[in-house]
Length: 135
Image (cartoon, rainbow, N blue to C red; front, top):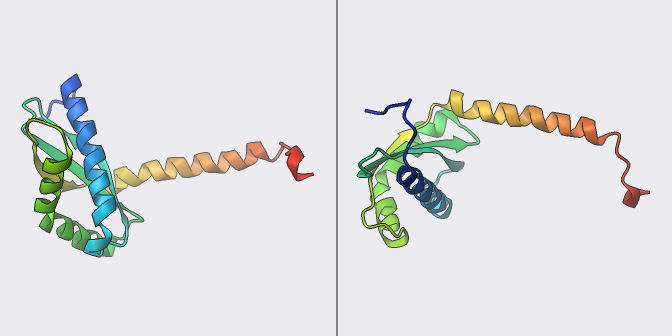
């Protein structure tokens, strides 16, 4: 059971970070082969204290509610390919057993809304700046 109050250990964070990077790289290399028309995002990786398993939370960008379930099914059907990739490319004594989960899009895409508002402020602050190279 996941204890939300307890911080993950250094080893848990290292394993989670290594898995997140490797799984992301795998999805970049293989998503087009599976007919997935969106970028696959690895939102979070949870590794319990025993390091024997890992939950990989993924989402898609741009999001397509109609295709999300189909894309997720294609990914889970190719999980053996992902496992094989990790065994070959990740230097760990033992690769955790992966469990792929679909992220809650409402939580994931709130970040995109926040980033979008930040981008709007950038244009305002730059309007007073005159670039000498443009003159």
